Amino acid sequence: MDPALLRDRELFKKRALSTPAVEKRPTASESHKKKKPKLDKESSSGSKHGSETSNGSFNIKTSSGYKFGCLAKIVNYMKTRHQNGDTHYLTLEEILDETKLLDISMKQKQWLMTEALANNPKIVVRDGTYAFKPKFNLKDKKALLRLLDKHDQLGLGGVLLDDVEEGLPNSAKAIKALGDQIIFVTRPDKKKILFYNDKHCQFAVDEEFQKLWRSVPVDSIDDEKIEEYLKKQGISSMQETGPKKVMPVQKRKKQSGQRKRQFKTHNNHLAGVLEDYSEGVPAKK
Image (cartoon, rainbow, N blue to C red; front, top):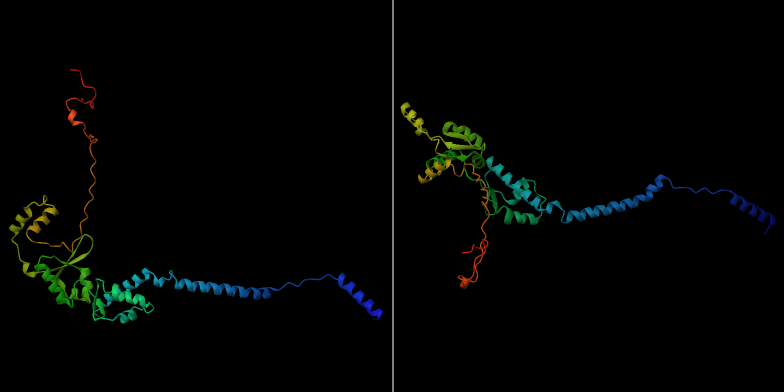
């Protein structure tokens, strides 16, 4: 090899060794590109975990609270449509369509058909179709007036306004149309009772008789005595519609003094021989 080339080669090596080397660091964009697949992997695993959770026992659509929430929504809807005058029967598919409950599973539909709606006291089933079942099924104002008259004749008292509103479509309009044929009475718990206003019982009473009536004292007669008298006369007015009485809890009486202890007696055959020292040493005779 040419000696001149060898000298140039050696000089090049010396210059290369004497020149400091600077490491090139990756830019922020390059590092972000490298970490991005890892993030994507983590997000994919998170979404997988979320899908597993949604299909697992924590899914809200499979919980009992969701099922009974759907049932309550259906019963409230059936009540509202009955109050609006829509008393015709509906299939389960029609009910789910009108209540916007289209995403429930087949298992929940089966539960609604065989258990929830079939055993609900506010739902009546007929040939696979469903309707609302009020306490009093009233078609119009005449049916309401007949019901109140019947209760008055049998001594059953009045009817709760809540039960009338539940069973009579457009009840507010019907009650307003009846006018003074019915009487409203408000109970102590703020609930309103409807009574039949029997106009045949409206007659003039002599003022002297009114004074005699008001002069009779009734302070000594409490509610229990009045209720007992009504029962003897065969009258059970306002028992079902009236507020229930809460019986006071009777406190347990403390025993006065200490109970005297009783001992078993043994050796009865030695009654004349043994002496009793339970009350101390007996006095000498």
